[in-house]
Image (tube, rainbow, N blue to C red; front, side, top):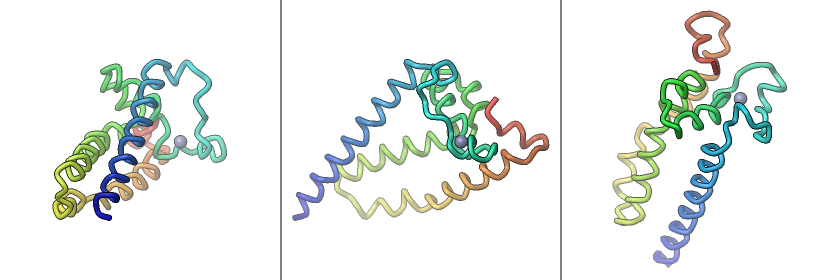
Length: 138
Ligand SMILES: [Zn+2]
């Protein structure tokens, strides 16, 4: 039963990673600022306000091309969180591989900070004053 659970977990993780890699390939090859097939941000088109994710697809495109500064200008939150997401993914693969689930608790101790940072970023980037306007995609 336990082995079956682990197997399911590994399959889900593989599917998830495959989707991430395929999406990264599309974003790498087709610049979101020049290709119209990317979906427009629903929140932005409805409200005219920037959501925490606005500019993130363009930021990931710049990151994948090694342009960290350009990526940071488009969405500093995504650029700041990405190392943690990559670390989390590697840790998760490690936990599954080594089967030490007890160690997961330590890795995720500060995970609650992520939604807090996302909400805060979404609020701050809509304040129409410097320096908050630097948080907008530019
Ligand atoms: Zn948005």
